Image (tube, rainbow, N blue to C red; front, side, top):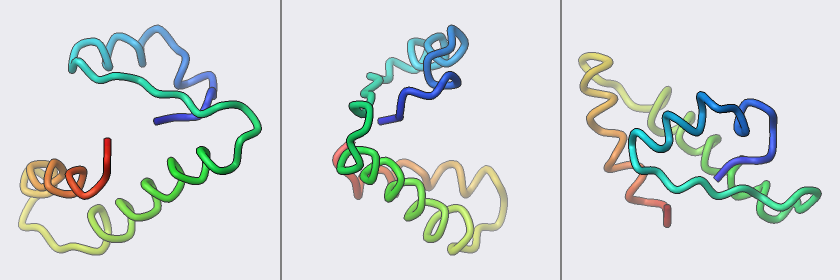
Amino acid sequence: MTDNGSCCRSRRFRQVLDAHTIRHIRTRPNTPKTNGKAERLIQTLNRDWAIGATYASSAARNSDLQRWLGRFDL
């Protein structure tokens, strides 16, 4: 889920999503309720996964991402 920023509407972004068969959901403009969901997901992942947890390597951190994403209804 992203907002409607130009980086999230680019051709390259679409190609990456398509390559990984990821469905892109956009928030409605001027809707803080749904924008807040996306922001909260990013905040939680940064705090608990990217920065808050200790991993032996970047590869180990990346392999643990799926477990973290499983906590959210994505």
